[in-house]
Image 1 (cartoon, helix red, strand yellow):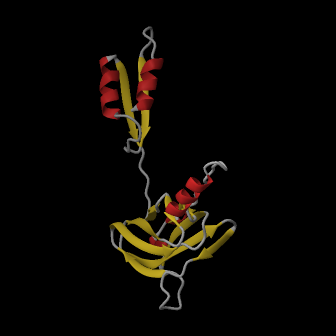
Image 2 (cartoon, rainbow, N blue to C red):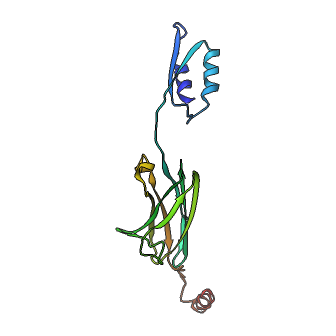
Image 3 (cartoon, rainbow, N blue to C red):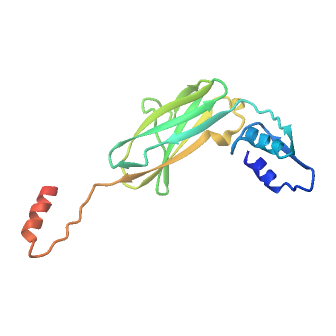
Length: 193
């Protein structure tokens, strides 16, 4: 849509104008059909060459959601969203990075595996994982789906998602007072505790 609008803006009245659109049919910015109608109304010919490509089965780690902020010693809930073209079994892994240290999270302590076994159904698959937070600082989480059959997933690079959360430590209050108000300040500090 937006590319057609730009082509219309470049058209000259003194020439015959033609726009050739190479498209996979997926609109990403603007409304291509409306822009093509506007171009036709302005006597600009629009030809479309459809691009076709074949791709095999695909698994995509669409999103990893975590809260932006959490408190120290809270449980943080991670929401993992995968999309699959077909049923696929495999293992979900979650990594947690604090500073330079990244570790694989044990999602299934009852087994000897670090990840958790799942079977993705065709379409959208949502899983929730709860993790304890033990350090007050920024945390990076990374989720990954590794299929049992690698031929069931053409683009492996889109199987990983990342998210960040900031963990706040104990809340603190700074009280500033004067010698003259020392007794009142002491009562305020006692009330805040």
